[in-house]
Image (tube, rainbow, N blue to C red):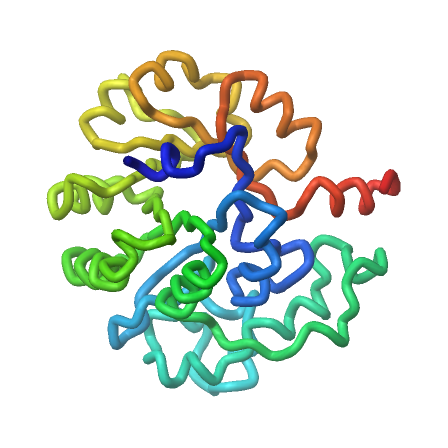
Length: 276
């Protein structure tokens, strides 16, 4: 049974990098906060120099950590240039108070005193949290050109092995479709999803079937150009990112999409709009 069959509900809302309107993205607090508000969490992984799989979206750390205070090394600082021990000392939360990326602090929806230092989490730590809360997870592999592909993917499968028969349904996605093709060779039972922005691959249905994915996740501008019914008939679930407006989400569901990825719950969106 693949990922989207395991979650017996529809439509589905995924917490994009966790509940990141209220907590710093891709942190344990953001993932824990998503429980009860979203149907699954989405996160990004890339390897540290020692191979530890770390949870961070950007290739570099300047935007969402205090790396500027931690090392005099030339900028930018990539996560793949440091080991897990060093990265465990980095604060991945404090920036949220200064940036207030969704205006939730200014709106009085987040008390900045409750944003406390957090390290960049490892994938192992997030999987443990997901097991504790029975929370499904979509793991996006960021493009990591400095890492050996097979080493990266085999390390990922090792991390996931203890959860294969447990209470953490997982989906692996990537914009790098070579990763997906190799994962399909390594394990034919995996639930995989192709991420796409800007344009669709040619001969879309054939392409996705050959890739062996069960999900197709697209950027919002591509929503209207997807043959949703044709893909659904072939067993491929369509998802869209990133939609925060409940109106846009409902329109997407009406088009036949089963999944949307969002930074916030409906309640928080309407409060920010002054309608809550």
